[in-house]
Length: 83
Image (cartoon, rainbow, N blue to C red; front, side):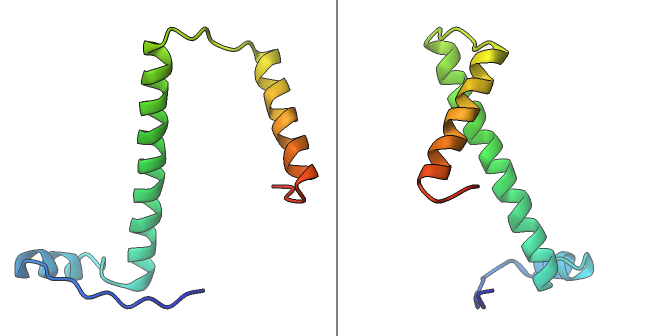
């Protein structure tokens, strides 16, 4: 685990609300960051999906998807990184 010290300049009202909601604790900030990372990953996925749709790329069949997953996993195993 890494210890990180942040210094923020926030409006007084926001600080009061965040403290009142228990959002300025390390655990709460970790949860907020994890949620933000998930949202960003999903937004990035949608951006790629929009580009694929615009490029008129045909969708993969389930067999093609499974083959891609198997190939990816085999590649990772060969690289020594099973996950």
